[in-house]
Image (cartoon, rainbow, N blue to C red):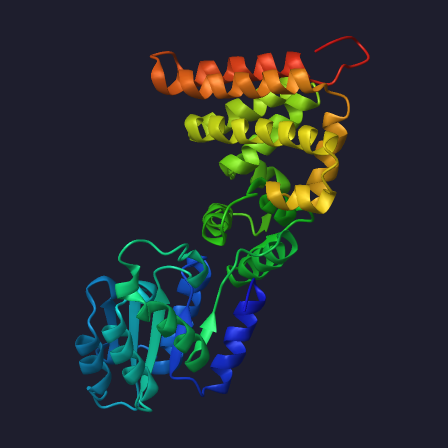
Length: 356
């Protein structure tokens, strides 16, 4: 179950009240924490003596069995939360013992397993993995036996709707366009990061959050900042690129992260140029570069007016900036600012009044 719809699916399953075993993926900590708290309140309310949190790193089947078999204190249920459960790395013997425990949970026990890694991230087998073959079978067992939720980062429209709901719960509202602007400035961030930025806005004395509030308070993710800065560079708007860059530094953005993302953006544009010239289908190109069809359309318009030699030079300059920042004593902020100037001169759109 994915995206924000997983939250609705979780609440529907919670309302049914039939599950005793719940499994959350390792992604999207904001959703994971929110749903874990709702599950705890559903199971035991504020009954702390019947709430138990276990560390998955040092957990053994025997310890979990003892926790499960111990009945609740003067209550109908108990809640057992296992953080960072390394299911995929378990040897066959331990996996078998956990299967026995989860196959016969008492009615009073509500167990939440928070996986330390997603099943899809196990990758290729490494030497010694044959001793831990039980991990995969346990993961397959858990997904069938329990109620499994794989919380993904919501799409932009879903994130906007989520922000509007959270603002309402906080007694705030977004002026038209403000929530969308917050989402745009947070491109590439997970829900936890977006909500952290939203908390800044919810602390304002005014009940309505304006686009101006968002612009003045929100710190862009490196991905979003690099996107806005590079877009201004390729549009030949050096003043806007420098303004965005300096604004992010003033807000505390990491110059090394910004530089790395700028390098990624320039390399992506260069790759689009090469891919388009080679006749790579749009769908394949967008997938290989992990960008949307709309983003690919914009990048293709950019590269259509820039020859491959200049794009290759731009990628070299961005890579050189990375090297200088990490290997010399030169000022990192000044180096990256100079990079923006060079890039704008090299690949920026020619304006009616002349070159950039």
